[in-house]
Length: 103
Image (tube, rainbow, N blue to C red):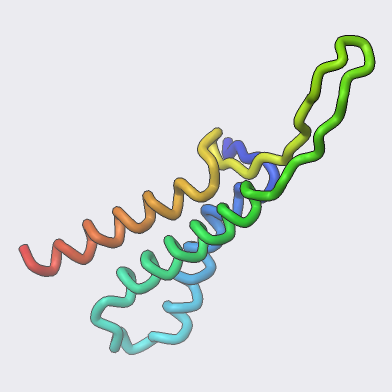
């Protein structure tokens, strides 16, 4: 079971869609570093979208009974991890996969 909040599912959907697009465009396997390219572009896209979505300002409300502020803010997570952190994970995975070409 996949658990997400808000648009956190995009952290998995963006790399999948880019991988499908690459496979449709590159039927003759002419891209030497196609998977690495997909991982890098996915990492950048997920990081930027995650920062934009999770960086939105919340709404501050004041509880009339206790006179204390409460911040209401949407979270965009996948498996309880903020979406932008998956961009870092994809970037590290891209470095690992790319480094396998030189070993």
